[in-house]
Amino acid sequence: RAFSDDHDLAVWQACIRALGTIDLVAPTRHEASAADALGLLQGQVDRLGWTPLSDDDDRTRQLRGLVLSAAGTLADDEIVIAEARSRWADTRTEDPAVAAAVVSIVATHGDADTFAECRRRYLGAATAQEEQRHLRAMALFPGRAELEQLLAEILDGGIRTQDAPFLLREALHHRHHRGLVWRTITDDWADLTGRLPSNSIARMLEGVRALVDPSVDPDVDRFLDANPVPQGTLMVAQHRERRHVNMRLAERLA
Image 1 (cartoon, rainbow, N blue to C red):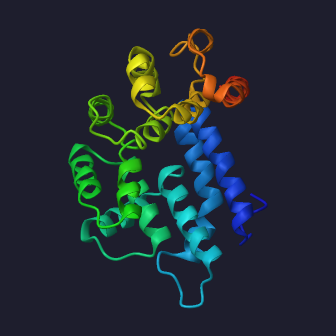
Image 2: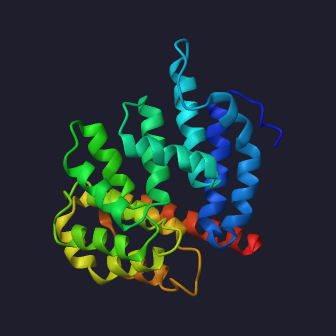
Image 3: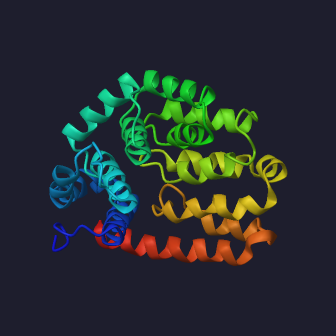
């Protein structure tokens, strides 16, 4: 917490990356890690607020969005979540960094109705930025039914092939159902690798870094040995190495 009063974007990017890694590899400890995250972030949330000032530079605006998003998704700050839902409901025009935070917070705590609205906003987006913001958020919803709907849409071709690998990568980080995503990828491997851009498969597999529970996904290395990705051999090897690092971290945090 020595950095809690620091105002530098790079410092907070590093801190929030660390918080995100802990949450990723130890999802069963989420309540405890959320409390720690809130203690770290609360001062910055209070200082920055939701509304940019006229003299805010780009880094301050980025920091605001980063801190708010982390407070709502990693720290489960109830006040931040409530404000994000309010801003989502009235669809007010936002600073882009704040708008991105609102969508990620609402999705992380969203239900079936919110998922349907997020999908509607994705399909009806007026800009590419707005479209991508809502598309990526669809992988954040906590419910299994919403995740299954998204996976089905990917497999049915309802999601563009250039977007599907990155959605699957994000879905592999799912706090509750990453095993379901991995089984979907392995069961439909031939179809996915046949349809999706060949240079995107290794990027999709970055998500295996989150598969740290051997009781849920014991065959990751065996599957990747049997199904090499020629277009990304080195990248996949790096993902696998990072996965093993994360597995050791998960054991230490258990």
